[in-house]
Image 1 (tube, rainbow, N blue to C red):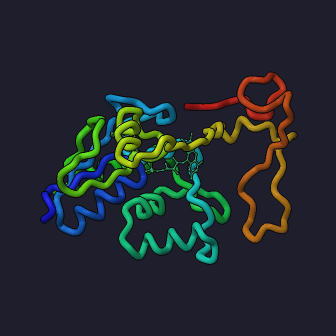
Image 2 (image 1 turned 90 degrees about the vertical axis):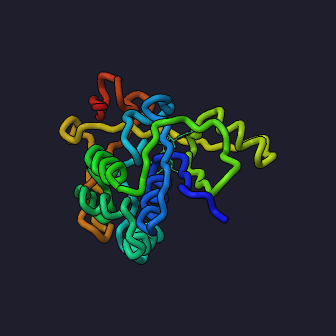
Length: 214
Ligand SMILES: Cc1cc2nc3c(=O)[nH]c(=O)nc-3n(C[C@H](O)[C@H](O)[C@H](O)COP(=O)(O)OP(=O)(O)OC[C@H]3O[C@@H](n4cnc5c(N)ncnc54)[C@H](O)[C@@H]3O)c2cc1C
């Protein structure tokens, strides 16, 4: 017999969608998010579903893997997709979003749902009673990571990635940048910037990418 409310740990992309779907099904749910009390190494805000790196959800065309997944999510009433569509920005054939308003409105919508209780709390143990959705992503806090190691009996639970720099479009040196070849099927809206070891962005004086706004 399930014990209500259900719990979702992690207010990222997966956790907010899970909490929303559970609540929309009429089941009360507690969504635990550790930020801002405990920051992660890559997140910069306290908003739910913060995009830590690229603001792209991938190709929109439904004959591409990402586009097909987006279409299926829309049919299933996905809140993340509704917000992504609402706050989309031009990105050629890709679905890219204005990351700030995307996360802000998603946070407000989730927090205002009458069946969702948003708790700003780090969970350090896997709850043993009731139903829990664990959605703490690749940057699961160390304490919960240890609990997960004990639970699964696995020594390593690894994820390795890098955050790409975010640059202001008008700061790109257009004498260096160029548009992709005309063979791509959509009108190109992204610039390609050739980089060498000497001008690999951020701080070099000769850099093609001088500014990295936060
Ligand atoms: C540096 C970096 C760059 C990335 N770049 C890309 C990219 O460009 N494109 C891409 O598609 N994917 C990228 N990823 C992968 C990206 O993390 C996933 O695509 C996506 O964010 C995963 O969503 P999620 O909901 O699983 O995790 P997240 O969005 O990370 O959400 C997990 C949430 O759980 C919270 N949390 C963690 N531990 C606890 C705890 N113990 N208690 C309570 N809350 C907790 C976190 O604060 C976070 O809000 C990147 C990942 C990293 C680390």
